[in-house]
Each structure stands twice: as structure tokens, then as C-alpha cells.
Length: 472
Image (cartoon, rainbow, N blue to C red):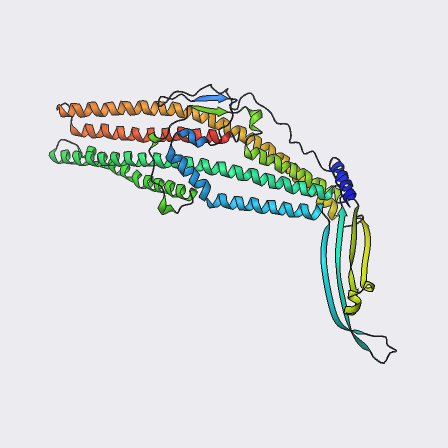
């Protein structure tokens, strides 16, 4: 039996090269750089940091720690422990691995079963005898063994195809883990940004209401026109109308963050401050050829391609002959004395060779089906690689432009702040009316909102770039 197993495995391995399409992924382009224009060595400076884009550097495993916040690290750890979606994906992978173990056990090893079958029955006798029926007892106990030789590798290829699918699920689980960490980081950033935007907008609305009241008082005194009064009222109402939707967005972001952490929405963590999150000064950027071996989504697509190739090979190999051996040994008899005596020994040895001849075209259709699945897997692999390149390219461009946007919004904020300070000083000296200080204050609060958005975009795109590099 051991020699037969070795022979069967050897033949199956040699058959694998003859059946099925190539398991190698198609050759993909390796561009010199990701985006239309070559990437800079560093981004524009903003917030005192010009991020270094380290081309060829290895990805960072726990990249969220680069933001320098213990609170953020704790939230990501909590989410990875408690997220129901991640736990579900882990359980699904465990089930797939057990399915693979079961299928390999069925295909690789002989099947051995113990059987005990006592029977008491009334059966028909011979017609010429006066007694037409007889009552008889039958006692049978035996061990049965069977083994199918995988000469053409059908079972081996089927097992390897399933192993490829399990590997694909494992890589998808890693992609899920990374996506979960990224979503938690981005949700935390957005929660902090929304809190600052709400605070600045509330201040803007209060200033607008105060300005509307002040101009209404001036209108009553005859120092402001009705048109000016109505215009200020309209401006105040428009500003106030933006606040409810902004508060709803802020609440929705916190609710989403809580669910990512495995909490109920009412138990969402309090918003952090954007100033508590440090912009990483160095971000690794892998070259395209290395990216193919690092990103879980690309590796999962490659595993799916190999599994599809093996499944097509298994469908082809199943059209060739198979040999099955069966053997049994045990005791039997019509009474206990015979059953337990040497005369009750029973055994059998049998072999069968099966060559599929006609199955209504089902075998050929099945082979064409798996070949089509392989072609689809090849196309999906190519699309996954190109999408990964585009994802990195878009993120690199966004990150550089985020720094430019933040620089300009901070420039506008400083100008608005200085204008507000100067206007207030002039008002105290009696050189400008009070409503002018309110208008300047509104402009400053509006500039604060834009800065909060720009700073959050830069942090979120940095997180996206870290994630897009895959695993080291």
C-alpha cells in the first residue's frame, strides 16, 4: 500500500504539468513611477513638515503608530480585537481550512470503516416445500477498506485548487484587517476634524446672529438701510442652516467609528484633537515591481488565478481512467456459533477501473466552465494590479496637493486672524464700527473650518498611502 501511494502521488505530480493552464500570473507592466508625472522626493511643507516619500523603502507593519498618538493606537487595537466583521472573517477562514483538511484526508488516504450488521428477517422458501416462508438470522461484522489511485492527478489538483482558495481567503482576511485599521484611523481623524468644524461653525453662526441684531438696531436708529438689514438677516440664517447638517455628519462619523470598534453607537469615544495627531515625516513608497508581492489584494488575486488553473486541470484529469481497490474482512453466519467460529470468516478483494465514456457532454462542459473561470481570474488579476497602481498614484498626488491646500488655507487663516485682531483694535479706538469686527470674526471662523478640513485630508491620505503599500 505504501509503494502504491508513492506511485500514485508521483504520477499525480507529473500529470499536473500536463493538465490545466499555466499557474503563473501574466506579465504586468512595471512603470518607472506611478502617476502621470514622476513623484517628488518630498511633499510641499505644511504645518512645519515636508513629508519624505522614501522610494523603495519597506512598508511599515503597524503604520498607525507613526501618527504618534497612544489614544489612536489603543482604538486600533480595540477594533482589531472586537470588530464583529473581522471576527466573522476569521471564523470563515477557519472553516475553509477545516474543509481543506477534510478533502485532503478523503483523497490522499484509504477509507477504512467498521461495520456490524445483525439482521432477523422472514423470507420466501422453495415453492415445492410445505413451509413457504422461513425466519432467519444473519450476523455480519467486517472491516472495509477502499482506495482510489489518483494516476492523472484529478484529486491532487482539486486539493491544490481548494488550498489556493483557502490561501486567497487568508489574504483577503489580511486585507480586511488592514482595511479595518485604516477605516478606524480615518474615522478618528474625521471625528476630530468634524468636532473642530462644528465648534468653528457655531462661533461663526453666533457672530452672524450678533451682526444681524446689531444691524437691525442700526436700522431702527436710521443708520442702516432696510436692504442692509435684510441682507445681514439672510446671511445669518444661511450660516445657521449649515450647522444642523454639520452636527449630523459629526454624529454619523462618531457612530461609524463606534461600530468599527465593536461598540454600540451610543458608546462612541470622544473626539480627539487634530493637534494630537502628528503628521508622519517619512512615508515608504514601494516600487511597482515590489508592490505586486506586498499588497494582500494582489496576492489574493494571484492565489485565485492559481486555484482556477488547478480546478481546470482537475476537470480535465477527471476525464481519464481511475482505479479503485476494495477489500473487506470479517465474520458472518446465520447463528452466533457460526459467527464466532473459524467457519464464519468472510473476506473479499476487488478492483475496478472506470473510464468515463458518455455523460451527455457534462464533462466537456465542466472543463470549458473551469477554463472560462481561469480566463476570468486572469482578467481579475490584471485589473487588481492596475487598480493598485492607480490607487497609489492617486494617493501620492492627493498627498502632495493636500500639503499645498493646507499651506494656502493656513495662509488665509493667518490673514483672517490678523484682520480680525486689527479690526477689533480699531473698534476699541473708535475708528471702525462694531459690526465690522463681527464680519472679520466670521471670516476668521470660516478660515478655521477650511484649515480643519485640509489638515484632516492630509492625515487621512497619509494613512491611505501607508495602507496601499501592503505588508513588508
